[in-house]
Amino acid sequence: MTYLLAGDLGGTKTLLRLVRSASPAKVEFQQSYQSREYSSLVSIVQQFLAAAQTQLGVEIAIENACFGIAGAVIDRASYLPNLDWHISADKIAQELQIPHVKLINDFVAIGNGVAQLAPEDIHTIQAGQPRINAPKAVIGAGTGLGQGFLIYNGTDYQVIAAEGGHTDYAARSIQEFELLQYILEHKQIDRVSNERVVSGPGIVTIYQYLRDTGNLSETPQVADVVRLWEAQAEQSVDPTGLISASAIAKTDPLSQATMQMFVSAYGAESGNLALKILPYGGLYLAGGIAAKNLSLLTDGTFLTAFNHKGRVSDLLGKIPVHVILNPQVGLIGAMAQAAKLGIRD
Picture (cartoon, rainbow, N blue to C red):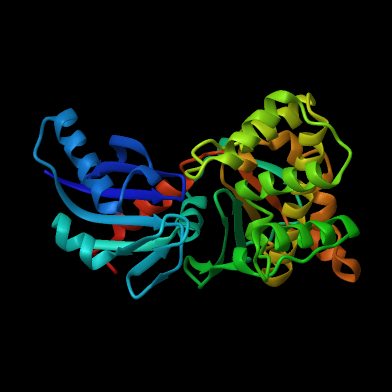
């Protein structure tokens, strides 16, 4: 029996889905794996297929596979800087005996998944003035900062990968200039990318900066987790969720200040992307940080920064802005691409 395999591979976790070639809408088997616990994507897929065969009780032959990768894909290969993995579509095809294998950037996968989403999978934070067949853009803060855009080609949308998260971080205030200097000194680097600030690790960095340079006191619960994260080499403990949850609950002033600064930077960079693409078809915020912090994204901080672009601010106010609530949008997009392999690829 032949199957389609899709994967959404990120710096934190890898999500795999198996469907029958004859009925791709029905999920036969799905599992999530902690990426850092494995040495390669092949090892994850091998474990997944073994578990699927045991669960389904049938011989599994993969016809097509598509993986959304949190990194640039060049010549059917990709390097994941957050995992130090080199991935090759040809090597995967050979080692796993899959006739058709495709790697796509994770935000290309998300872009392909956008069209598949139901209305309840999206929360609109700015209605704007949408235009039919206009460009669309996707951006999402997670382990890193992903970006991409969609262009209508006359019959369908073509999704274009981008690496805008690695562009230079642009400070907009004295406080952000101080944050920039703090990162340069404490990380011992000579440039700061947007990903250093607008990401999960960026939230922790902002917290550290405000803690070390401001006068806001820490609550013991958050402080203990952050210090544990700072002390360990593997950094398997992630304070991001606790910081954002404390900000939402308003139980920790330092976390509240951290998330306000983060959300403002997120809004500003989203606005920068929007100016470059003019996505009147909609700008979509992807990733768990956006979906889990919806109340912080809708309190005005994000949109104030998004729309604050001087003489061209009016352009930004006309762009629809949506938060993707479905955490599996990348996997959905990768599966849509897997179904097309061998047909037009």
